[in-house]
Image 1: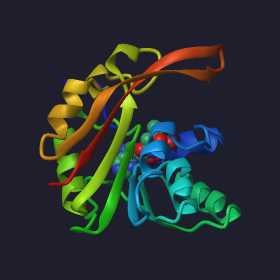
Image 2: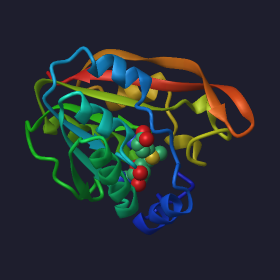
Image 3: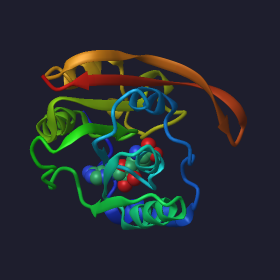
Image 4: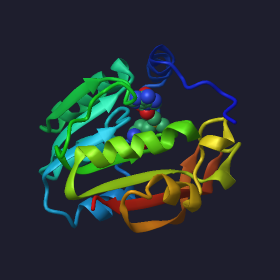
Length: 202
Ligand SMILES: C[S@@+](CC[C@H](N)C(=O)[O-])C[C@H]1O[C@@H](n2cnc3c(N)ncnc32)[C@H](O)[C@@H]1O
């Protein structure tokens, strides 16, 4: 059972407004490694935030659509992209209501989005529909074991390889595992673990 209601667009806006550097500006390292080996095409970043992954993909030659609930986040993403001579198509939308289209992308990124468990499956079904056959989904999020240290307050939303494997069962799964690394934090460097998965649309 989920205990915390999802944050609204207004709450996300307030969070971004309060903190100009909410997340790192660097792309996710595993995404950069994975996408760096693909031929650039059309990419969709769902819950793109202030655009670190979307901007990086655009600088690598991808045509990128960034979707997020927060207007403040996407305005920031567009500004940062422009400063790097990169272009993003930004769409302020709730993924639950927005039609991603069909067979429209070669890559979909879902990075540190932690939907409620009963919505996880629906998200990845929409992602699958948005991908061309053979297209890839890259997803990464906070591991359940890090609950209380990072990520949303509701443990049900955090990831384990089993949870992601289940949510991605419609895909050919190329990777699904925990990844531990060191991260800068206000309290100094700390060890954190994510769960990362890559699926291919059959
Ligand atoms: C933790 S941030 C991650 C941002 C970015 N993907 C990254 O890795 O830096 C989660 C983002 O998801 C967005 N988000 C949350 N629920 C959403 C929804 N239902 N539809 C679209 N975006 C959503 C939030 O506004 C926020 O920017």
